Image (cartoon, rainbow, N blue to C red; front, top):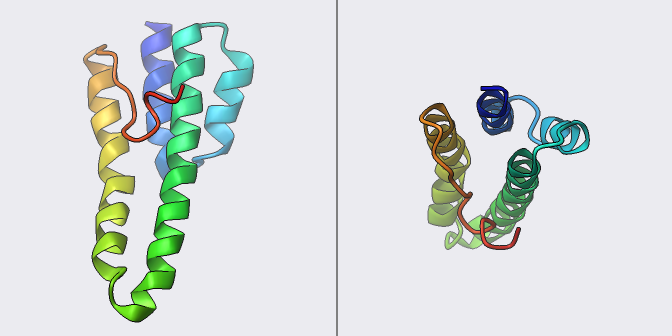
Amino acid sequence: MEEKWAKIIIHASAFFAPVLVPILFFLISSDESVKRLSVQALLFQFVMWVLIGISTVLSFVLIGIPFLIIFGIMTIVVPIIGIINALQENDWNYPFVGRWV
């Protein structure tokens, strides 16, 4: 039960503290799956920030606008999918970074 809510909070932190909360859970938690998920959440946010930054630069040439829209939507939708899977107590990995960790 405790692990379930920790995972939900880590996924939901993408909307209010995408860096601080995963780091805190990584340091505080003793459960390996929560630590793994917190690293994934942190890496996912970092990768998305980099991709959005690159898309913003490329949007001045009009080629980055579709990517900017797609990555912006992913930044919102992927944590919601994670929350739903955590509520159902399913193991779920973030896209792009799930296999890195």
